[in-house]
Length: 395
Image 1 (cartoon, rainbow, N blue to C red):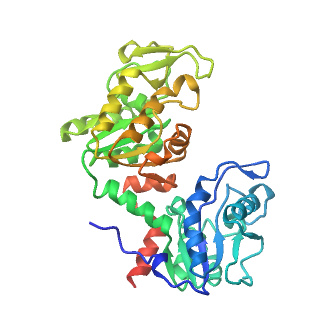
Image 2: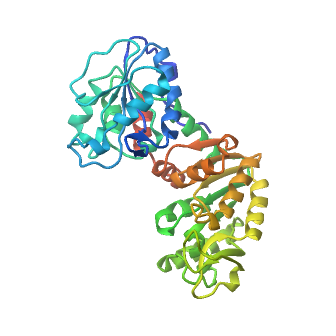
Image 3: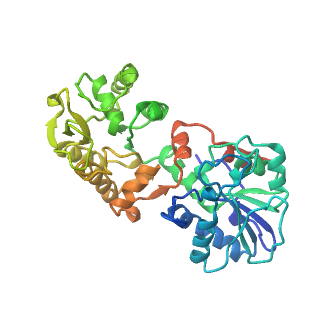
């Protein structure tokens, strides 16, 4: 089974064409500088390829959550333009008023100011979408991280542009996810961490139907532990979702796949970098304990599961890894994934932060730039910006 057919940028003649590329440059900014350029670096091959093909480039992105329809210096893409100029070793000018069009020469790279400054962006306004489409000969959707949003700069412009295609970064994302979830080498292992079951329950439910093994982490694991009958003390968990977690545990047992739960944990009386920690067996957790990481025995067990996996999908840490006393579980997990021979894909902001912290980027098969889009793909939901590209390719 192959991914749905898309028109690919790599297959088009971009010579002397106006090329409008939607990227995801929603990066952290501080004191007018880019603090982490992971997403910008991921887009560079697409930009360089379009330039070498002779295209005249306009780049689109959002940044943060400004009040729509109003300019805000705080959410300006000016720091991104400066950083991109350095990375590309050429001038990338920032266009504040770009919807009316602008003169472009071969080799030009223009970064259009934050798309969310335009009224109608979030509502996928037809009028705004058509204005964007009128700017270009070829629209390139390359921002997987925004593909789950039907907005003017993602889905709308793709509907009305003369040609709409998928950029190399988007293609790689879809192929990696397809390999991991549609044609995986078995056993297929999914690690889903995070604070709340409620934010990822549909992902857990969807994955539990076809993965061989599921490892919940963080507050999510605490809810499953409570569902399995263990006292989790004062640990973050969701009482209202205990019945649903219990149902997934029962269903997994019936299907013959497994949901792995911690057997030992790191607890403290407060979630603090200076907290005194204790390793306890799960049945020993006290009423005033906070579970903040998996214990060493559990970390070893999970590493063994990871070693035997054929495919690994990782979204979310297994503890409060940002604080040193509770970082060891996620460190061991990251190291095990990095050493595994399995095809591994990691996605989500906290996951990528952990991958970067433990310096295992080069040992993960694929790092997904998408957060919400990654989760929605795991849920099996259709991504609007991909769906329109499929529709355009079919006609």
